[in-house]
Image 1 (cartoon, rainbow, N blue to C red):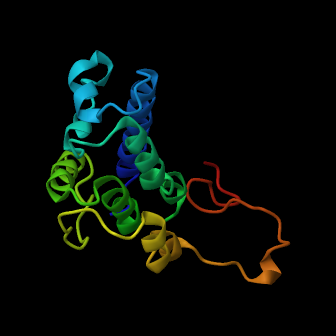
Image 2 (cartoon, rainbow, N blue to C red; image 1 turned 180 degrees about the vertical axis):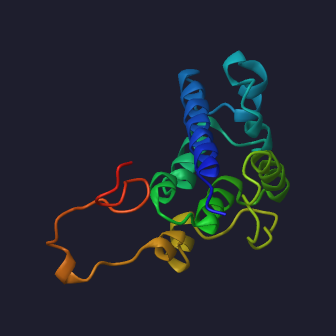
Image 3 (cartoon, helix red, strand yellow; image 1 turned 90 degrees about the horizontal axis):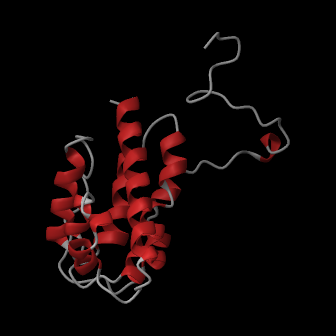
Length: 173
């Protein structure tokens, strides 16, 4: 189930998110809504996922939410086993908090390429969370689920890259 094609699609999507953020930032209108600019700007027409965002989300808010929603992806995409929950839950919580219909539309968009994306997460509630994202993350962070502390004896060990995406020692690939 840990498919390299899923990793590729998720990495491409992360790139699309960053490109959309860059295009939005270049408009120089941080207080404009993403929905309005997505309709007006030719450079944003191909980013279907922008239509799933809350209608009142501003460019400035989108930038902050994207940074929070996707900061974990590069690390998670390099792990040997993908943490499906961590990849989707940060996006659900940080980009679609209080927008369950937008989340459903986003998941449908993502599942065209990555079938498992967004499955198994708890149902969303309407209305934004009263707790800041970083405070809720402290309660049950996907980072904690993927983090394994190295014993102190390993801290001074040489920094060897083992397993995916690095070949095993002695292999020819």
